[in-house]
Length: 414
Image (cartoon, rainbow, N blue to C red; front, side, top):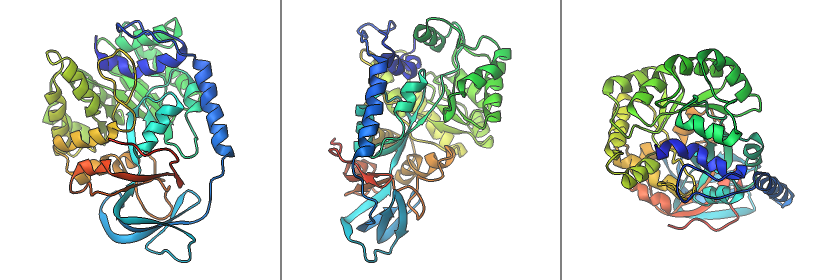
């Protein structure tokens, strides 16, 4: 059984008051209602806390605007937005950037947070937006949204899975029945209608074997697009990758751990305007724990071929804290490892930074962020080092702002 296949759902099993039966050593029971209540109570507390709307000038910084590095300048933020670049004016509050690099907040395009601690850890390491890549309980997912001074959560739907599949079995375990599985193509339109009824930001599909057939994946994708929803599709094997590409999903999650995709497939993905989120951090961890059955070099070579074909590549980690599984990936700190692995797989440092900022924002339709320019969200990370010269310099975090609110906790350490 694939550990990777279980991870997206396992994290969300914990808040449901369930013990996971799939892995020896996983035997936690967590009160879903209590966690949701705690998340909502924390939001109320944050809203009651004073947050200044005064202008703030961040002086003496070299700005990586999401595309290129600008000369030393000043960035002014006000009311959660970037007001200006280059003009400080008569502003009472200033921060000296000490000639550091100011860049857009990082976007982790594949994560599974469930509580405030997870959100805080994402934030302290400079992640200002995270895609919650599966949602089994809407109340929990809503409780992770709209927290002042913390990472902004973009939440996906329940994953669409077939009876008899790994992910289908997980859904049955959560629900106690198979009512939310997709048994055939004729069910696809209604399944999507139901899945988007609570208002998720995107739809999540599962390509796996055994699993949904091509016709059903096609129908699910078509109906999701009719609802105006982007589609992210789990695909961690060669055949699944081809299925996801053929279905026309917007974003293919993971990369094969059996064999790399062909250049022909990579070019087809590029020609259709699809993007890829390889999640190399978790793939390497899985491969390291199962070297005889999982091949990380296949994932790495897939990234090289995607890049060569011109497929936009987005940074995502599959961050989770599921006890007992082979590949726990910590929140926040893992985005820096993902950037390093993307560079190892052939991206330049500037391409890796774009994968976690401007490219991610563009292809997720987050047009208010991912770049530093007037009128955009003030999601900002101040570094003392220069990651365009050495990608490991993303670890030199000095300060983090989330929609203009500086993170109040301790900055992450490495």
